[in-house]
Length: 167
Image 1 (cartoon, rainbow, N blue to C red):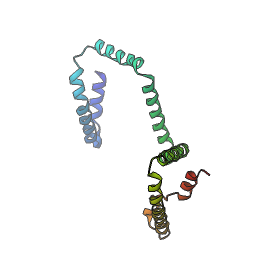
Image 2 (cartoon, rainbow, N blue to C red):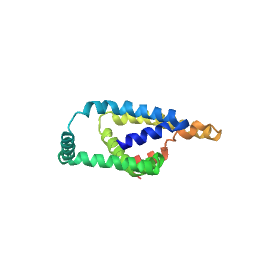
Image 3 (cartoon, helix red, strand yellow):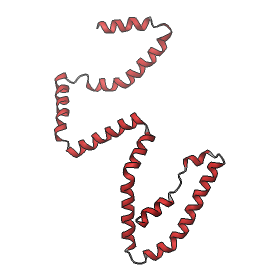
Image 4 (tube, rainbow, N blue to C red):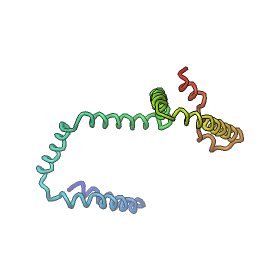
């Protein structure tokens, strides 16, 4: 009760801040009122009981769900701490070798299919030519000062050739 009296006293003497105080108060009432209307008649003991039961649910959550939740929190905190760019570079450097191995494995499996090697031999030279031209355009536009080129990656053709040749 004393808090309400003190709040009213401070609100009346808020001076030029009074409209802002009223706006904040109205916003809080808008958010809190539906919750209050719904639960103000519920006995406190029942609310305490419900709170305990929610706490007990933690025991029944599968460990893999807890692990994923923990990992998600870890990722979020890392992104907040280091920034998205640093996090992306870390993930890229960590998973790039695995992705390369998967790509090579998939390529080898595909080459075991009938006709795939012939189709690949027909398509790959044209794909290599188009990739080379794309890289040339990106480099040329960067040299001319076009900012959009900074956002377009170069295709690492030499690295791709090295990975797939097995050297």
